[in-house]
Image (cartoon, rainbow, N blue to C red; front, side, top):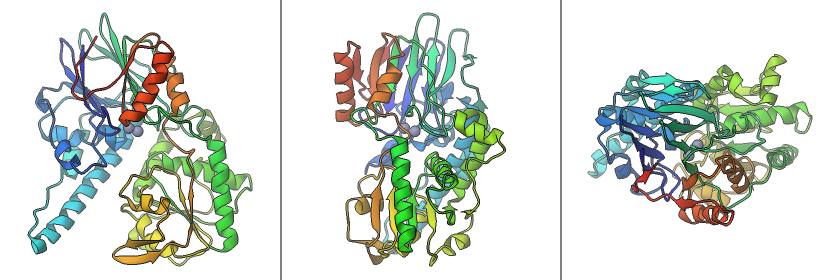
Length: 454
Ligand SMILES: [Zn+2]
Ligand SMILES: [Zn+2]
């Protein structure tokens, strides 16, 4: 087998591996590049002919792993996309949402372009492309061998990152390769811990947080309770920018537990995101794939993601009605505040010294979220200057990615496999590689377009 990293080599986003065997050509993931000025151009080019790809194996439903699949399909790929049943269900909502956002973005730029003379770039794909692709999705469960051709087999292993996430093992008669996908921290709520990966000849492993240790989830939940209690005592609101997939469901689980335990008052919580509402339903349809504590709640006829006082906002009108309220928690996207409904909630709450904005996810440079985390005293929202008087609280322990200790634990199961680290900033991957070398493992950091062979 020959394996070529097409993306996420020396960087975090754009996960995609081209795997060539004597029987065919396959992809593991087909994700978008995010966060750089040249992303548009990179997202539109593949260093292979999409028509010659026989199948795609998808590790999970985050856009940096699945976001280019509809474009691959539009360019002629007609093979099956194999993923766990939960990933298939999550990916349809994620991809349809991505198509809608691209189309809206294009329409906005097109209107502006007519006034300014600047051309607008058409969307990478639209909803029709996504719907056409979805007919090629094939759900396949964890732990069961999937024969691809007379020689190649694939197995999905639980990776504990988000609902449905999997490490992908590809093996033939005499060798095997393991792709970690994204790996979650052991001991988290909602998603189960990763299962022990199999021994392999070669392992491609993510290294997003390979240079640091996270605080525990229990410490983070306590910080969240303190933030809510402070704002409610002051008479204000709590705004929580949250990613719709996994982070929102984790947060609902924790908010429910805090209320049940009497650690925060049972004031109204608004979940203001149609995408998050749809994805939470997928979680409820795949309870069997969640961790023991979450399944125990369901067995006791309790809903782990719902509670008295939770209000779901589907329409923009429902979202607007939240403005002007006091003593409420507002959970809304986007997670980095660079769009979505959270923006108008920030406009209505940032100026208030009795309110808090709680950041529970990574804030990339250049986003409104990052400017707020960095302490900006004034920001511009919807062309209006807004003073920032609200308390800003950053909580670091809610990460869906394993830290250094978690990654070492996962890799510890892979025997004496040669390790190639990807999905990380170069200096971070190098730190983890140094530790692994010290412990006697054979390791290197992935190079884009290099050819790895087993
Ligand atoms: Zn991910
Ligand atoms: Zn990722």
